[in-house]
Length: 428
Image: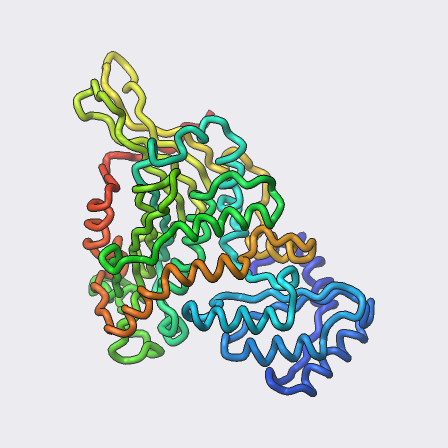
């Protein structure tokens, strides 16, 4: 844990208030002991209680039942945070939701997706609905495609056994990327109240058909013979990965939101491990300028929201090349947070979300109907992949992923020019 000198005292104070109790997930006596221990703390049995379930999905039912039976606050609020994965498919998710709903009310259940606590993900609503300039162009008339990207530059590194049970679609695409898609595509909510916002997200998901197999590319990384350290190792070199595993470590999928605003616009979701960089971003690529007078020397405008690392919003645009020339040149309007907000410490995503739970704010948490629609979209594809043991396309550790993914993006309308080069601003 990285702790600054000024935080040491705070950390010590925090640890002094922490305690640990050992018990079994399915043992009634263990939870009765937990309740007795909680009741012995300041506030006693009447204090508010928050339970964070970062557990294997197989024990959720035992733990949640025992919490409800033995550990609820007598007078204060009791809330439960549930970590993903929320099931493996639509059926298992529905079973888990039905079980939790039989024990707790919806306002007690906080299904956490830490990407909803990221600064730039939360900024999407303000960017869209607090700026007049974006409203008229945020639709199918001006947007050619939307690309949502999540890239990690490392592989499983000994965690392959856990990862292999889920794969990249369940681990990233069905939750993190789909949540961002909702915020990009939804209509303006009636207010910023949690239910109004979540209502609009559900409306978006209901307009998305299940993913078609023809609009998906799956990959699995191989070691780079010329690499160093972990980069020499492929997915199957991880000793915790089952022999012959077909689990994808990379996926690109194309979804369509079939409503008046977005009909025909491809939403391209890309995610993978062992790629060439660590990056998460939202990219809106706009359509070509009609009536081009510059002889095909203009590239498409793009609005990019970089979620991590180095939070930023920048608009790629054309401007006149400086000097005696009269030719267009690609540049950007750049809002890089570390430059604009030099002395601002951005809280960690989990810091924000746990604070929201304390405050009873469910805006950045997943509602049960939202979860149901998300699984409806991906369950047929997941069953097809696993039923047919679809072989993922191999790609080299440290690459951009399979070339077939770039081909799919090009086929549905994304244009990659490869001409843009970011120039670091000169110091003033």
